[in-house]
Image: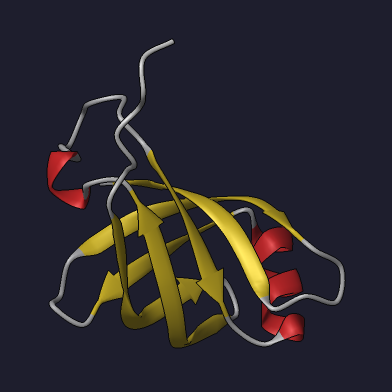
Length: 94
């Protein structure tokens, strides 16, 4: 079985927006965000760290946006969160 090269991770601070919320977030993106292009079907997985209350609200919202400190904006689809936990697991798209 071939050995798979580990995917790069990108971590940082940004701004999370979804209906009813606009606030700071810490994120960790798995994969190369530079490969995302508008109109392509490529998505990356990421986790967002906020308060447990905001994590639940984000998950219930279903969609949102992440803006990095560099000003790059990603569309988010909320996939999961752990009840009472501070992480939301998402898919990123441009």
